[in-house]
Image (cartoon, rainbow, N blue to C red):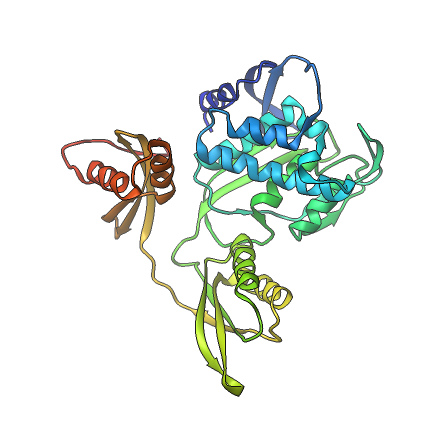
Length: 372
């Protein structure tokens, strides 16, 4: 993630206390890792309500995708704090998480996910430290109550540790709770990075991130099905949302005729085989069914790429479909078209046509790979 891009993101926040961000490589034991440094002045107040932070991010000059990801992370923290303290979300009073450095951490993580086009995060088991934590609320058990709530919310896989310090912070847990699942996908690794923690332990205090893509040779899929005749449309809609949040590739409902002359619904879920057991359990937990059917699938896929196209509305993301390296089609990202239609008050059909014309015009060399 280029440092200049990160600086532009942080400047878009217009936080008076923020001055600069730096990057350096340091040694953690025998391993070289990168450390991001934040330069900011002491704040006049360290406490912000969730409603204030939500309004601040919504009104900021951040790119829309970064706003949405940042808000999703803060919402997870607000849900945790509201539950722990027994108060409405908008009344949640952030302490450490409301400080400038935590806001920058969260927005920086959201910007990195957007820059690299990360579609899904998979996490290894999280190490839980022991002992107690000093906080604005005084001494708290480790992990902190909000962190523990988030670990439960995302059904995190954890492992014990004898290290008597906080190893998973509420901020880190919220980032994972907003986007991550705990499984090990098969993928072709294209890049990796190593980040350095501030504390020193007997082992290297580092965080490693791998970026990759599923290769056609390793992609395995399952179809999970069940028949339902005693759930309302509202409940089924909630189940669909949960399944997509948990990593389902596709979720559909089909009308069927069941025994006893009852009309029913067939729930079908397309999932990565690695996610099959977890999603099947979710269906058993969230619906009235007593069992699910699982079928192994074979799937042929076109390759996909994303680029940026300069249009009269500014840069727009473009999705390319390729077969054997040859581009078959290119279409604008619907979310970008929808955002532009709202901003310009133009019909979305008109916006889509104009953007598609810019994409299809062979005389304009305006396509630029988004990773450049």
